[in-house]
Length: 253
Image (cartoon, rainbow, N blue to C red):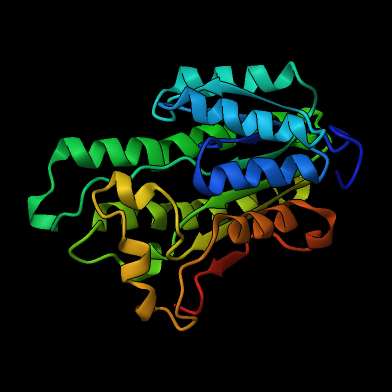
């Protein structure tokens, strides 16, 4: 641990059982936050992340939360309140459906993607602001939204709906950062590129990161820990004058 466990308050991390979210949860605990992570489908993965944190001397727990459900989002933050003062929020949970052209999309698929990837983070940010904002008696804090390089690349013939949802996250970060800049809250966005996580396998292309490595100037996919390190930096005092920033973590792509 870099500091006493839990000394920096509570960090709420959605989608914290796998990939970037799991790496961020582990890094946040190492940096001194008590971590509340969420999962939706794989409870064992959440248990494993929490155990990894506990084994290293950190503090962590988990709850199940569907980021398309307002009641789940509110309950998630209520659980965090039981652990201490929420000082950090990472909106990481997101979904991408199977590759598809726009002329093959359905209203049901679009609604599902937007519910989890846009409405969920908006509602969760509202919960975080109610706890952190000096306007509401809070002591401030940091919010990091996990977007995607797809928001500026468009993901043609793959996931235009996903890319559009991440474009909304970029805009949320810009707008919210200005809304709460004078209330002790910093809001920033990270845009990962091709990261070697299980997300590709869940979408039917387990080798996608390897297959696309040649399109990246650095000639490799990124690692979840590399994104997590940037998130922790943005949440910390070292980034104290950063708000409204969008940080690309994409190997130059």
